[in-house]
Amino acid sequence: MYGMESAKTFTQTIDWMQQGFKCCGINNPTDWSANQTIYAHYWTQTHENDVPDTCCKKVVEGCGAGQASGFGELVYNGGCLENAVSFMESRMALSWVLLVLFILIEAGTIVLAFFIVRPASFTCFKSDADAATA
Image (cartoon, rainbow, N blue to C red):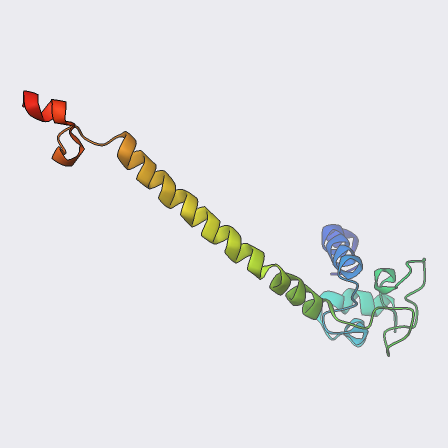
């Protein structure tokens, strides 16, 4: 799928991930060789022993040529899966804080709504003047 004209969005997404996470392949650059993934099948048929240029530390056309067999200095050696998991784990604490904050706001809203819309028949909320007229 990667590199096919009909899968342009997929190719752009992989390119964005590899540049954004500074990675190459799912596990490492060798994922781009020998049809290790179904997604790289088309790529490996047309680019023997190459990685996409977005695997390169400095993207220049053709910089990924011949880089799929090992770990060169021109390409990122880490895989995108590990980097993506690390990215998500680093934001997990923030997610929990936001969840707790949301729950507190919701609970506060429920309590506030109870006091604003409380029925007049509750005796605990009647004033002394209301009790004298009753």
